[in-house]
Length: 229
Image (tube, rainbow, N blue to C red):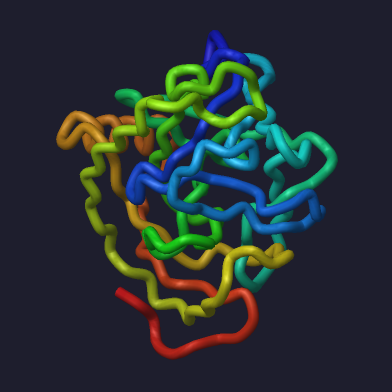
């Protein structure tokens, strides 16, 4: 990338396949990044900064950074940390992909594509889009403040395409706990229909990766039944 893919500023971040907003519940290090219905509150606001190759994403309320630490096995959750973490970001047709590595072999993913509150965000072997809105565009006059009365609600138009499923065992549970774990699933989806799909294929070819896997649900505490297709 020759220039910063997202200008420095304060944003809301939404799952491109769910329309739900990302947040930290509190300032506990290791707390899961989770997706909820949009409220506009400070814990759903994110300061984005960085350079041309990677970005830092810090929660306005908790001051914790979105972070990630992989392990050889087990579910891998995106979590909070007091130390900055570099995320690689690509943009296609107005949607954004956040990856812990520059090859984009894995990226953020709202687990299971679920729209339920407290759904954890994971790192999954594939490409899943996210949407961003400047907080000022949704009526937030100062970072950390609530949207002003009569402010517009976010308009998220979602076109989701399921990917082939992977034969892995699933785990599931509440999203808000403290976890770090393994990639277990995802849905490749997006906004913009065929144009976005073409863009995804282009990005996959560019990064030398054309294998898409399916999503399974994960749990914070204990394994559940069979794979969810």
